[in-house]
Length: 316
Image (cartoon, rainbow, N blue to C red; front, side, top):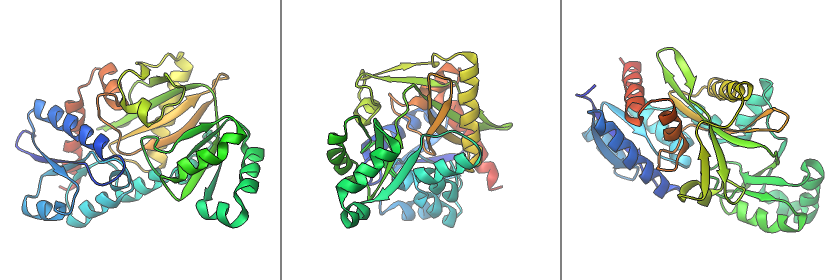
């Protein structure tokens, strides 16, 4: 492993560029600490030339947003035949589109909050207020709004009063042309990372998320001190097993590979609700996968060194 040349891709042009750069820097340092030679590459117009002229033995995708999670960079790496850590392009697209992921899991009998998906054009063509009224009739209040595609909770908002819904909808649609509205489920919010090894995908201990503001939005995710993380989550044995099983099931059902992170809510009655899955989990100082790895007794460098080994082996 020590003779492998590894490129960590981060940055890009999405709304999550700065978060991705932070993930890339932390991951690169972790990989160097276990003896790997690492270059940090921005995902820009020079990327293909770099890949051809300085072909690495493996790439680790630390991109967030559509470039890293929507399957586009993965498609480029597949076209060039470059081994990489993470899910293939098809699985990335399934996970990136939140309604698609929810539909796949519902078909498998997994609970997820009831939802509707509406493009911006529907509000223009049918009249915003009648459509908003119908959404409230269907889902009730409070309601969770989020872009159909996207990460880091950009545009995500909880609406508790119908009078606030038009403004919240405008804020959500600023990050995408289609909104996913969900019935809001009260409960304990957890994130469960899944890492693959020689025996298949294994869930790391769940991390419980307790944001000071009551919603785990972009600011709460990436500003130190605004969220309390309980690691491991304060769950009884049955709930801890249930969220682990859910995360592994989501990983398998969506065809994900190497690493993922599933977000879920444990309701007061013990029901576990799937929220969404991330195929390129954040690795910043406030990100959840590194916290879970620490609880499990693993270093970030060791985890990703093992995933690099798997990626290289896939092309041999």
